[in-house]
Length: 381
Image (cartoon, rainbow, N blue to C red):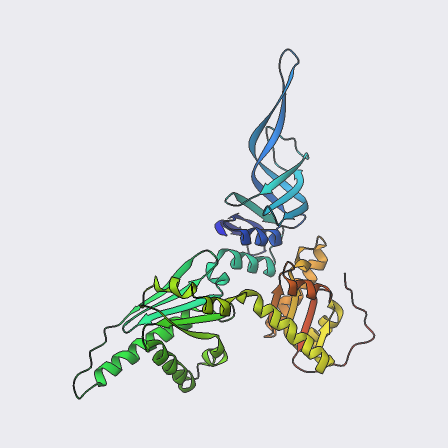
């Protein structure tokens, strides 16, 4: 998704102009547009004209309309978002208050204005427009003295850092300068990985090189992680996969991604995190039901006690036409994040999202057990 302009004030009122560049972007747009918002885009309108003799002719004209959204329909097959509403700005072809349906399509800009941009909508903008937020695969392609730290999205490979360090050759009877140069090189690569790889998003990090450079680097990196207390590396050690490449340059990444063995490891990485979270919830429900709540009322009670470790919520709840209902879920998400909880927003088009929807769309894994509040009934709507 390309962000052309953004004009949102401190009170949360304003608009953004976006261009959907791939199919995934239309899904983001579907989650952003709500009933009551206004959408401005180019569209085709059938116009009838009457001549001096009284004959009527009809023609199609392209015009720009601003409508107040009353109905939203997402065609997943054609990847088109159809937005229906009343015209709210003067137009030479369409009267004020007349109904019109605008089709939001790929590579066509549209402006979306809201009375209030809440934190979930703003996070969705960041996720859709920042390619690093959707890159769930990272790669470190290296050889002695040269390394490239890359992020791989569905449509592109981004080189986030290029490290070049001159490493002295080994001399007869002395390798100290060579070893110092290697350590300096490895330290710079570790810093680049820390700076550019978001382990909350990235599900796998490929480390590729010719020879044994990758093995030496990974061994050194995890030794340093223990020594310097780099918890982020130790917590995500299982995400690092070593692969062979012909060189330390970006083009070697292509041969890695064509390897069937590597591809099988990377399959469905984006959904894997959601599936694991849901599995953890079901496991907790079986072993300790007082640490697994579902339904908005029960989850809110757990949140008041600051007991939520992981919140599972379906994105379908944020598309509600009931503004108060949406605010309720947004407030819950913000509160859990403020209390250092982990929030996972599930896609309702994925099988894990459908399963969560059967549990009212919201569930939580708790830090500590809370007695089941039997006196409260869940509002599953």
